[in-house]
Length: 177
Image 1: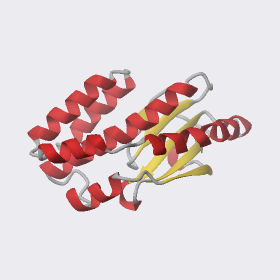
Image 2: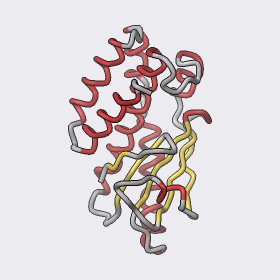
Image 3: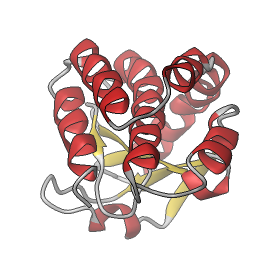
Image 4: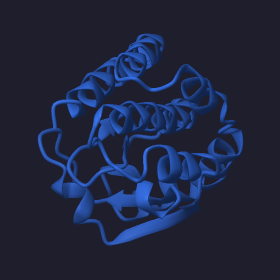
Protein backbone atom coordinates (compact mmCIF):
# COMPACT_ATOMS: atom_id res chain seq x y z
CA UNK A 1 0.00 0.00 0.00
CA UNK A 2 2.25 2.71 -1.35
CA UNK A 3 -0.29 5.47 -0.79
CA UNK A 4 -0.63 4.53 2.88
CA UNK A 5 2.83 6.03 3.34
CA UNK A 6 1.20 9.44 2.93
CA UNK A 7 -0.86 8.73 6.07
CA UNK A 8 2.30 7.68 7.91
CA UNK A 9 3.85 11.07 7.04
CA UNK A 10 0.73 12.84 8.32
CA UNK A 11 0.88 10.78 11.52
CA UNK A 12 4.46 11.85 12.11
CA UNK A 13 3.64 15.52 11.49
CA UNK A 14 0.71 15.37 13.92
CA UNK A 15 2.77 13.65 16.61
CA UNK A 16 5.32 16.45 16.24
CA UNK A 17 2.54 19.05 16.67
CA UNK A 18 2.91 20.29 13.09
CA UNK A 19 -0.82 20.37 12.41
CA UNK A 20 -0.83 23.07 9.72
CA UNK A 21 1.90 21.23 7.81
CA UNK A 22 -0.08 17.97 8.00
CA UNK A 23 -3.17 19.72 6.61
CA UNK A 24 -1.25 21.33 3.79
CA UNK A 25 0.53 18.07 3.00
CA UNK A 26 -2.71 16.05 2.96
CA UNK A 27 -4.51 18.55 0.73
CA UNK A 28 -1.58 18.62 -1.72
CA UNK A 29 -1.37 14.82 -1.82
CA UNK A 30 -5.13 14.46 -2.28
CA UNK A 31 -4.91 16.75 -5.31
CA UNK A 32 -1.94 14.77 -6.67
CA UNK A 33 -3.98 11.58 -6.24
CA UNK A 34 -6.75 13.06 -8.43
CA UNK A 35 -9.32 13.75 -5.73
CA UNK A 36 -11.56 16.44 -7.26
CA UNK A 37 -11.06 19.89 -5.72
CA UNK A 38 -14.79 20.12 -4.96
CA UNK A 39 -14.59 16.91 -2.91
CA UNK A 40 -11.49 18.11 -1.06
CA UNK A 41 -13.36 21.31 -0.20
CA UNK A 42 -16.44 19.31 0.88
CA UNK A 43 -14.36 17.08 3.18
CA UNK A 44 -12.64 20.12 4.68
CA UNK A 45 -16.00 21.84 5.20
CA UNK A 46 -17.53 19.05 7.32
CA UNK A 47 -18.21 20.50 10.76
CA UNK A 48 -16.75 18.22 13.43
CA UNK A 49 -17.60 20.43 16.42
CA UNK A 50 -20.36 18.11 17.65
CA UNK A 51 -17.95 15.14 17.41
CA UNK A 52 -15.35 17.11 19.38
CA UNK A 53 -17.97 18.07 21.98
CA UNK A 54 -19.05 14.44 22.34
CA UNK A 55 -15.46 13.32 22.89
CA UNK A 56 -14.81 16.20 25.28
CA UNK A 57 -17.99 15.50 27.26
CA UNK A 58 -16.81 11.93 27.90
CA UNK A 59 -13.11 12.66 28.36
CA UNK A 60 -13.32 13.31 32.11
CA UNK A 61 -15.07 9.95 32.64
CA UNK A 62 -12.48 8.25 30.43
CA UNK A 63 -9.58 9.81 32.35
CA UNK A 64 -11.16 8.97 35.71
CA UNK A 65 -11.74 5.36 34.66
CA UNK A 66 -8.18 5.09 33.32
CA UNK A 67 -6.75 6.31 36.62
CA UNK A 68 -8.97 4.00 38.67
CA UNK A 69 -7.88 1.06 36.50
CA UNK A 70 -4.23 2.09 36.74
CA UNK A 71 -4.06 2.43 32.96
CA UNK A 72 -1.29 4.05 30.95
CA UNK A 73 -3.23 5.28 27.93
CA UNK A 74 -6.53 6.14 26.33
CA UNK A 75 -7.01 5.41 22.65
CA UNK A 76 -9.95 6.59 20.58
CA UNK A 77 -10.83 4.06 17.90
CA UNK A 78 -13.15 5.15 15.09
CA UNK A 79 -14.56 2.66 12.61
CA UNK A 80 -14.46 3.79 9.01
CA UNK A 81 -16.64 0.84 8.01
CA UNK A 82 -19.26 1.49 10.70
CA UNK A 83 -20.14 5.13 10.22
CA UNK A 84 -17.25 6.51 12.28
CA UNK A 85 -18.65 4.79 15.35
CA UNK A 86 -16.10 5.67 18.03
CA UNK A 87 -14.97 4.01 21.23
CA UNK A 88 -12.43 5.17 23.81
CA UNK A 89 -10.31 2.25 24.96
CA UNK A 90 -8.80 2.32 28.45
CA UNK A 91 -5.41 0.71 27.96
CA UNK A 92 -3.48 -0.85 30.82
CA UNK A 93 -0.26 -0.78 28.83
CA UNK A 94 1.29 1.39 26.15
CA UNK A 95 4.07 0.72 23.67
CA UNK A 96 5.29 3.24 21.11
CA UNK A 97 6.59 0.38 18.97
CA UNK A 98 3.47 -1.79 18.73
CA UNK A 99 -0.27 -1.33 18.52
CA UNK A 100 -1.15 -4.59 20.32
CA UNK A 101 -1.67 -2.79 23.63
CA UNK A 102 -4.85 -1.26 22.21
CA UNK A 103 -6.49 -4.59 21.38
CA UNK A 104 -5.56 -5.95 24.82
CA UNK A 105 -7.92 -3.40 26.41
CA UNK A 106 -10.82 -4.83 28.34
CA UNK A 107 -12.45 -1.54 29.28
CA UNK A 108 -13.97 1.07 27.01
CA UNK A 109 -16.45 3.92 26.78
CA UNK A 110 -18.65 4.42 23.71
CA UNK A 111 -18.33 7.87 22.17
CA UNK A 112 -20.78 7.64 19.27
CA UNK A 113 -20.58 8.43 15.57
CA UNK A 114 -19.05 11.36 13.74
CA UNK A 115 -21.63 12.56 11.27
CA UNK A 116 -20.57 13.61 7.81
CA UNK A 117 -17.64 11.36 6.97
CA UNK A 118 -19.42 8.01 6.71
CA UNK A 119 -21.30 8.99 3.57
CA UNK A 120 -18.21 10.40 1.91
CA UNK A 121 -16.24 7.25 2.71
CA UNK A 122 -19.03 4.97 1.51
CA UNK A 123 -20.03 6.82 -1.64
CA UNK A 124 -16.98 8.78 -2.78
CA UNK A 125 -14.22 6.36 -1.71
CA UNK A 126 -16.58 3.40 -2.28
CA UNK A 127 -15.53 2.08 1.15
CA UNK A 128 -12.13 1.33 -0.35
CA UNK A 129 -9.34 1.75 2.17
CA UNK A 130 -6.23 3.00 0.34
CA UNK A 131 -7.01 0.74 -2.65
CA UNK A 132 -6.39 3.24 -5.44
CA UNK A 133 -5.25 6.83 -5.78
CA UNK A 134 -8.63 8.51 -5.30
CA UNK A 135 -9.72 6.35 -2.35
CA UNK A 136 -6.30 6.91 -0.79
CA UNK A 137 -6.61 10.69 -1.08
CA UNK A 138 -10.10 10.60 0.40
CA UNK A 139 -9.05 8.33 3.28
CA UNK A 140 -6.04 10.53 3.96
CA UNK A 141 -8.22 13.62 4.35
CA UNK A 142 -10.94 11.88 6.38
CA UNK A 143 -8.46 10.30 8.78
CA UNK A 144 -6.55 13.56 9.14
CA UNK A 145 -9.67 15.58 9.94
CA UNK A 146 -10.83 12.96 12.45
CA UNK A 147 -7.41 12.91 14.11
CA UNK A 148 -7.30 16.71 14.32
CA UNK A 149 -10.76 16.74 15.94
CA UNK A 150 -9.39 14.40 18.62
CA UNK A 151 -6.19 16.44 18.83
CA UNK A 152 -8.25 19.56 19.64
CA UNK A 153 -9.85 17.76 22.59
CA UNK A 154 -6.67 16.00 23.74
CA UNK A 155 -4.79 19.29 24.01
CA UNK A 156 -7.26 20.37 26.71
CA UNK A 157 -6.35 17.24 28.70
CA UNK A 158 -2.64 16.99 28.05
CA UNK A 159 -1.82 17.19 31.77
CA UNK A 160 -3.96 14.15 32.64
CA UNK A 161 -0.98 11.85 33.14
CA UNK A 162 -1.99 9.46 30.34
CA UNK A 163 -0.93 8.88 26.77
CA UNK A 164 -3.77 10.00 24.50
CA UNK A 165 -3.93 8.26 21.13
CA UNK A 166 -6.27 7.75 18.20
CA UNK A 167 -6.60 5.12 15.48
CA UNK A 168 -8.93 4.18 12.67
CA UNK A 169 -7.03 1.00 11.82
CA UNK A 170 -5.98 -2.13 13.59
CA UNK A 171 -2.29 -1.70 12.83
CA UNK A 172 -1.17 1.75 13.97
CA UNK A 173 -2.05 4.74 16.09
CA UNK A 174 -1.29 8.44 16.41
CA UNK A 175 0.01 9.54 19.80
CA UNK A 176 -1.34 13.00 20.53
CA UNK A 177 -0.13 13.39 24.12
